[in-house]
Amino acid sequence: MSNEAFVIMRDVSFQFGEQLILNHIELSLKKGTSYALIGKSGVGKSTLLNLIAGFIQPSQGSMTIGGGPVKKSKGNTAFLFQDLGLFPWQTVMEAIMMPLLLKKEKNIEGAKEQILALLKEMELESLKDKYPHELSGGQRQRVAIARALISKPELLLMDEPTSSLDSMTKEHIQQLILAQQQKLKTTLLFVTHDIEEAVFLGEIILILNKNGTIQEVKNPYFAQKNAKDQLGFYEACIEIRKSMNMELPMK
Image (cartoon, rainbow, N blue to C red):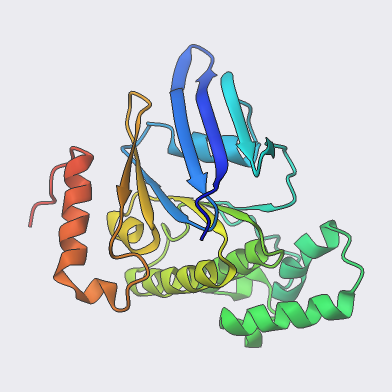
């Protein structure tokens, strides 16, 4: 892992009409590090993600990725949308092939081999000819993740990657995301409302406050074997909840 600042936001604000959503944000993301972005509803987490993706432009301030300006169609950035964005007319194989075709990949046979290898890792090999309506929620989620990973992005942005899944499927998807992030050493920034997910998948946890400040918390349980079997993992979750000034759930 490099200590190099890969994504840099300096004095970034975003205003929609009269509403100030992000106020003077300062943020640096190191290359190859996994970041969880959490905060109360309405503080601008998804807005921050969309700014880094280049889907929207800041009202003020500067942003760079890998030393260059953020561009709307930056080739080394992949985005996993909350609604997944799978097309009903594409098979699993076609969906994952699409980013390579958009990049005008010339070695189609080599690309197919690459896709089949990723499908195996994501446990989708037997579903390559299926359409989205033939898949379960967890399977569709894995297809969307595989599509985001196929071009081996330097930066992967995810908006609530497991929010619509049941707890068992969610844990399985989280394990797959972690394995791929560790394998590719991609810089990962994901938004989540799930504190356990943040502590499991985030090497650094970023707490976005309403006043625009970001608190960084180093996570000692990141990528630890059987992390969720340790009492300290849940104590870390409680500390994060306290940092967000949230009440503990009633039993």
